[in-house]
Each structure stands twice: as C-alpha cells, then as structure tokens.
Amino acid sequence: MLTYFKLLTTMALWGGTFIAGRLLGGVVPPTQAAFLRFAVAGLVLVVLLYRFEGSLPPLDRRQLGAVVLLGLTGVFGYNVGFFTGLQTVSAGRAALIIALNPIGIALLSALFGGEPLGRARCLGVVISVAGAVLIISKGSLSFLSQGVGPGELALLGCVLCWALYSVIGRRTMRGLSPLAAVTYSAVAGTFFLSPLALAGGVLNDFMDFGFGAWASILYLAIFGTVVGFLWYYQSIHEIGAVRSGVFINFVPIFAMLLGLLLLDEPLTPTLLQGGVLVIAGAWITNNSGIRPKKTSG
Image (cartoon, rainbow, N blue to C red; front, side):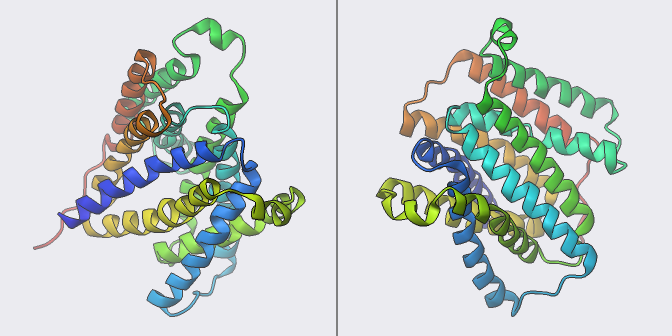
C-alpha cells in the first residue's frame, strides 16, 4: 500500500512540475531555470549517494560516454525544451504533449533496440499521435497549416530527448544503481547547462529572482527531481517496471487538474478528447505484449 501511495504522490509531484515551469515562464530564462534546477538537484543527489552507497561509483569508458549522452539528452536537451515550451504553452497542454514519451521510446526501441512494435503497439502509436495532433491543432486542421508554434516544437523536442535518454540509459548504464545513474546524469547535465546559464547572466540575475521563482526552482529540484525519481525507482524495485510505468499516465491528469486549480487554465473539450487519446495510446503502447515477471513466494 505504501508503494502505491508513493507512486501516486510521485505522479502528482511530476504533474506539479508543469505548474512550476509555467510560473517560471517569462520570469527566468529557460537555460537559467534548467541550470538552477539541476545544480540544486545534483548537489542533493550527490549527498544522498554518499549517504546510501558510500561513494560515487567509478565509471568505465562505456559508462562515461553514456553519462555524457544522458546529460545532453535527458537533462540539457529535455529541460531547455521543457522551460522554453512552458513559456507559451499551458501546463495541461504541455503535459499531454509530453505524455507522448512512451511513444517516442517505443519507436526508438524499434528502430535501434531490436524491439519490434507489433500490431497492438502500432495501434497505440496511431491513437496517441492522433490525440497529439488534436491537442496541438486545438481541434482545427487550419491551425496546423499556419505552422506549429515554437512552444509545441520545443515540447516535441522534449519527447525526442527523453526517448533518447531512456534508450541510451537502458542499454548502457547496467552495473550502476538507479540513484547513481540519475546522479551522474544530473551532474553532467548541470555541467553542459552552465556555459549557457553563465552567458545569460545567471550569476547576476539569480539574486533578483522573487520568492515565487525560487519556490518553483526548489520545487522542481527537490520534489520534481530528487524525491520523484527516488520514489519512482523504489517502486520499480518493489512492484516491477510494468506496474510502476502504468502510473505515469496520471501525470498529465494531475497537471491538468493543478493547472485548472492554480493557474485557472480551462479544460476545453478538445484538450480532454485529445488527452484521452494520448493517454490511451500511450497505455496500449507501453503495455502490449509485456507481462510482469512472476516473483517467488
């Protein structure tokens, strides 16, 4: 019961990251927001790694290369796109676009990981993409003819970055604990973000950030990154990746509800219809042909 409570709470925390990111939009530049999030999170994760595992485990050449790629994709690329997108896209719409993550992972795994899609997964991809088109177009194909906005493009870039992060991590980070892998990728991502953040004047600007901006940054770092990832990986250890992964479908639901309650973002029929399609398609893609391993006892 505690595991499922942690999982559901994690999904609510991750839904809240869209609210925090939206609040930072127009206040803190994307590269500075991403840098500060992971500078704080990376420091906390290093402390936790020493606390629970005693030290930073050494990396072999393959793992070092993987850490570089994970930092560039899952931290640098994903978060620059995340904060850029949330400057112009509402939290609920953004969360539903990001809900395409399982689709991106499935497609890249089929292309490069030797994991065929199969008919059911292909159906899930089609359903989810149809929902995304509905959300991005706001229910009007003429809207698409005008070109997809930069915010939506940035969020679609997030999906690509997370798919790369997931496929790379799955294949190359064996031998490291989840905490160590997340810590290394957070530290690497902070390193790659630092030149852009410094060039953007983060050392001069951060003292001028108001309470709301710092509260959002700390929420993203502590709750959205450290607590969220730790609880999610603990849940995977307890009940398996398949049953844990199903809960990710709650993230856009929490984001839409929190957007309605905290930001007064309307739940339009098009958003709800597209959301149902995206989540249903992602669920089909993420679970078709997969069976949880039986455990003894």
